[in-house]
Amino acid sequence: MANTQAAFGFQQVGTASGAPNFARAGSPTAYKIKSTYTTAIFFGDLVRMWVSGDAQGGAAGYLTQWVAGDGATSTKIPVGIFIGCEYYSTSQKKGVWNNYYPGSDATGDVSCYIIDDPNAQFLAQAGASAIDYTKIGFTTDVVVGSGNTTTGISGMYLGTPGATSTYPFKIVNILTSPPGVNGTDNTTGYNNVMVAFNNQQYKNSAGV
Image 1 (cartoon, rainbow, N blue to C red):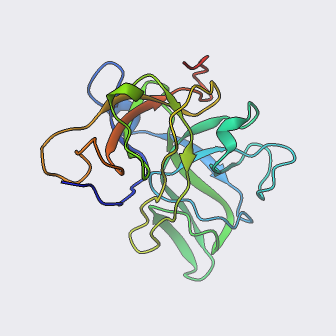
Image 2: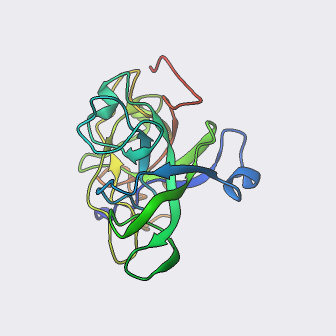
């Protein structure tokens, strides 16, 4: 059965040692988003630190959403995967928790929570061309896509596999079961792939 496009960003499924590291998953690392940053960040999005000269708004020490093409540079290093935030809502006049940052409505800095375990592994969707077993060990950048403002879920998916050492992810496995479920046909595009960090703030790799 051919897969259908239904990107969901990066969903943690485990670590290099097996089961998810619940100690870290239950207590993700807190970071900050500048309240003046106007780009929405969704649940499952890859994020990075703002760097000097960045076209995106932000400030040193604050997080911004990953941009397609960032993986081709050595100065834009992934931090981890965004899983929610809390901030004082200007419109609601109270503190709120949200599974995505809408890019507005925050008074003061936004506290956000990031899976930054360097050994974490994630499920993600391929693009229009299938990623099969021959691509295991290759690296890949990220296509940003469009996040869903109703569910807050990311629209990010994997780029074309290659051998660039600065790409953020490395392909480690291909999902093929249960048969017939969307994403498990590795002969057609939009199949589900397991990836690990290749280049990340706590984990730098020479790639393929």
